[in-house]
Image 1: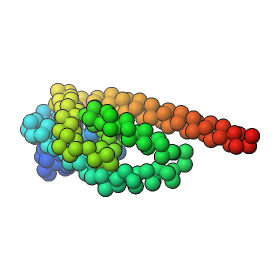
Image 2: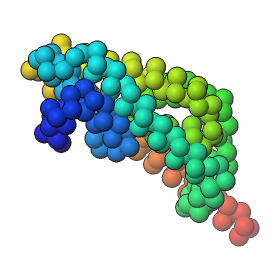
Image 3: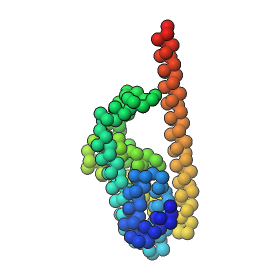
Image 4: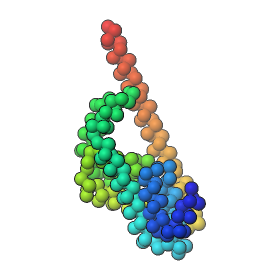
Length: 205
């Protein structure tokens, strides 16, 4: 994957880094924790302009997030509820509670969500489903993405040949987030199965 990003940046320069980040938003397995430090390292070697790298990677983040926003908008609330109703262990009320929470905390969620591994891509979908004001979404996404990108690009720029250290430590953070998500899913399933079990016992009585 690194070789592919290197080739893209070698061919297109800073815009290549932006394209890689846009694709990372759509395909999370392409980690920004690798692309951004690598772009910073490349800039430190004089092969790309540092400011251009920051501008293009942020633009790529916004383009990728906007694509996911429109996917959410096209999906819409009614389709989301219809899909949720067909999922095992998921209640429509779960989606409605999530919707109410997002309506209340949506701005902060979009801004800070851009700086959380995994969620930084996914958060754009509910923003689209809820049709968050597009200008507000773009401003929050740009601000959050600029902070995240600058931290990782500058880390790669300052570390130079040791830029891969960024990926190592960031990878630990991503695993922690994934672990917490997995734990939350397990707890959700256990609680929902217990609710079903209690419901069946109540019916039998």
